[in-house]
Length: 99
Image (cartoon, rainbow, N blue to C red):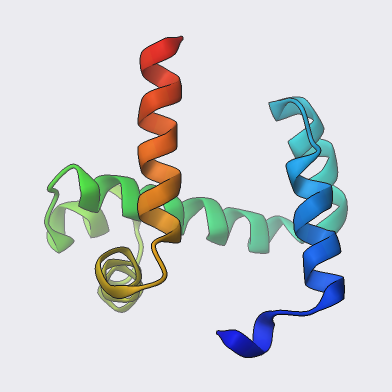
C-alpha cells in the first residue's frame, strides 16, 4: 500500500500514537470513525487473534459472524502482509504478560 503513505496519514498515525489510555482511544475513534467502521476494524483484529491462536475458519465464523471471505483476507494479511497484525499481536501478548 505504498500509495497510502502521505503527510496527512503520517499526522493521523502520530495523533493515535499520542493517545495514552483506552478511554482516550474510545473518545478519539468515536469522533474519527463511524460505529460500523470501528466495529469492522475491531472484528478484523479479533479474527487475527483467533487465527493466531490456531482457530479454523468455521470456528471463527461461528464465534464472530464474520464471512469466510473476510477471514481469508485477514489470514492473508496476517501471514503474507506487511506484518502489522503480527506485530500488534506480539506486542499485545507482551503487554498482557507484564500486567
